[in-house]
Length: 444
Image 1 (cartoon, helix red, strand yellow):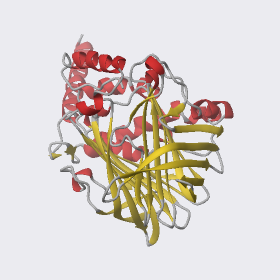
Image 2: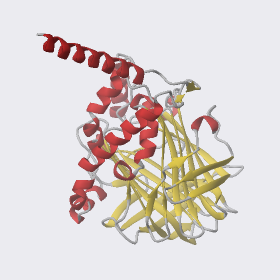
Image 3: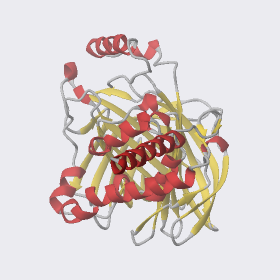
């Protein structure tokens, strides 16, 4: 009897200790601008717990399945245009960013949504000639089919992006008008035909390859409350619903401006993202740099703030060597609250990032910029910057994106030209959104 009482007492004490620990881990850390958490008193404990869980999770999902995930069949499956599911938020995005020593820069992005809705943007920066952009910008929405029929290609609005060889070669075509952003905006007829080629199937998968230490750092700064534990229980579902990888390569071809040919040869990368978990209205901010160095190396540096997903400040990125070897960033002092928090991106940025092997001092200077709006109801405002850079003394060129929340909606003078079926869907979605506690995304 005494033994049972002792066992009960020990269990009771253990339960109290667990309850106290859970409450302590759930304490809110200090916040900068009421958004970005600092390291709380239990940061170190939470960091090592998060790191342990992440490593076990990645081993179970990726490491023990490397042979399958690296097979030609699997790579061919994820590289082609994806079949959009019945989920209303299903998406499939292919983007290209490129630059060269001469300072020429190109950005092309096409996002497929259901019913033939395409969100497209093209920017071309040519020193001495200025910035050219696709004619619909800052709006990105195109309707590529009659009466909202489904589409299976990255095609529409003069664009056509398609695969020529799985994980090796893609074609980028555009035929139509581009706006020239000079003192007086004018349109020029352009025929663009480029080929993106990668030397191998190697790529950087954000779910698989992003530094576990950077993810653990972001998680350890958050309050571990019931919402966090609920999210943790559904992590497998979340991983299955979003795929994002990038692949470095070379972009070559020509652009014809009203009969005059311009040959292009650039260092660049291709981004492919697809799934159903892409909620723009839940993203507070992000900043993203894609830099291409004169020595043939490149790097991506970013910081994402999505508090509803317990990532108030997630640092991301990698360095790619001239031979195509990817090394994830393990550290970065680029903090969102220090760069453009009030809604105006800075024209100069200096920060330090590191991999396991090396530290990099990055210096950015903006040469030109433009604004576009992302989302079916312009949920986000993106500043696209075209930059020159220096990394550890090596010169380069590249791109930067600063994304902010935008709550003013898509203007009536633009949305009034949308097809009737699309306007009806938006009205229906708006009625559903008004019933929710938080702002929701439009399906498109």
